[in-house]
Image (cartoon, helix red, strand yellow):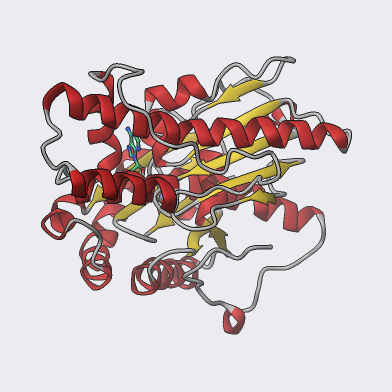
Length: 347
Ligand code: KG4
Ligand code: ZN
């Protein structure tokens, strides 16, 4: 089954063609980072206008790269949410136009869930995906820090999310406050590599075992207070501080994942894998912290090009969800029932 994926939820326009939910034939991403950089964050209306400029061009280029023609496409998958409303509408309107003109079904998928499929793309073609489940899955991105229990590739039981800021959001906000650059994650990674441990300490967030939820606003505020008091942090001292900050930002995710494993065991649930996805999964220290759970549990990360927003993950999830609908005899929503959603649906 050939699925066309379209993504436009935030500041990346992306188009991809994926065969059978696994084999990426082409995947193109047009990033708007340079457009939003002067503002230190994404400006929604500018994002929507930029999507409008790039989406058809990307479609044509991705089609050329894949060697397909339009009649080869079996299904169109598009991000329905969460994301910026105006930005989502550009991708969804484009996808609906294609669906009508090519006379192919259209499926809307959840962007956050799709990130997890980023971790499944790029596995050796002979990997049996079913063997990786049940799994614990984590999406650690600019907008979400979500932890799931997954019995199979299309069932997402949300176990925990953030009470306030997302992990990537916290990295971005702290970097912005300290004038380090945008987006913050990659800059912080570079500086932390030069830091030394044990020279600065930051408080541990939600250390108790009673909370599985994440929280980042306390850590952000701690960094803001330190920065207000001593803007003179520089050179090695600054790198040491950034390392301590990054360690806590990522350490919290490891602690909560360990806690989730403990709690699931009480329900007699034993995952075979931990799937880690989202933009922050590009960070090597984060990958180290999130490896080594023991008991034969293996951690899987996306290839670097599938950590941040892309359309291959949208096509992949669309493919699995469509096949599941067909298996269960359910139908796709009517045109009149189609809508986008700016916020994650906590269900
Ligand atoms: O998944 P993503 O591309 O977009 C969302 O759906 O939010 O994630 C973007 C986030 C940003 O917060 C960015 O700072 C973070 O991913 N990020 C990183 C790295 N690369 C991107 N964080 C830490 N280390 C990186 N190398
Ligand atoms: Zn994303």
